[in-house]
Image (cartoon, rainbow, N blue to C red):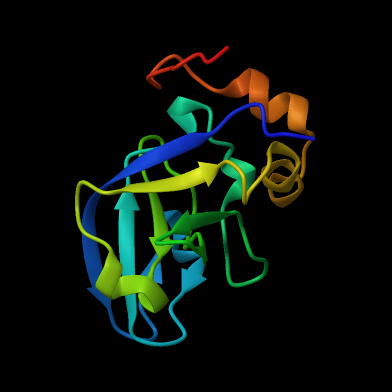
Length: 135
């Protein structure tokens, strides 16, 4: 099967945090090493499911950054997500795009990480995204 949708988010800033620092609402994710985060302008107001959040207890969704899978760090907030880009830090900069859905991460992959089904992922994508339709 071919992907029916791709979703990209823009990096608005990067942050370096020390080992032991927490990320997200209620400090549910703790950096296990010095970590570089990419803060991305996508959140649950855009339809990116809060269930895709990462915590110390369970991994969350992933993103493709510079061709490599990178895990989310902390909770999905209303307008932002944090992605651990430590392993690709030399290849990112504010203004760049990351892939949240596409060839490497399918709708069902994201749904599984969020504890739901692909249909909910697709129907929940909000109006704030710029859409490009291809025939």
